[in-house]
Length: 151
Image (cartoon, rainbow, N blue to C red; front, top):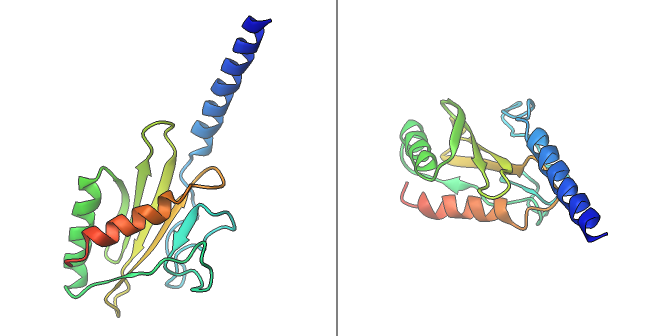
């Protein structure tokens, strides 16, 4: 009996890992639409500087800078690479990066938008799978903010 329970648990673990592996597919709807990043879903595993300020679950403050837009973007890209993020897309004013968790291999998408007319970095950080991220996306953006304060 114990052997069957162990086999069933092992099978469930394998099925869960396979599910997450195939659910970790890169979204096709990321990027800018009329100067806006994709809105966060209702689940609490996403933060965005473009969310409504009254939405305490999803809103996070943007990052302001004083240097030139291109210099800031180059510094941001350099920093992202230094912490192990994979940069998927980088065009002037927009960066899409991915970060993979070490244990299970969850992939989160982090987007940065630097509008031409403002000295501001808008950020959206979201988990691809699951419901709650236990604050991982918010902590990530705050860590980026702290490390870019000098820009």
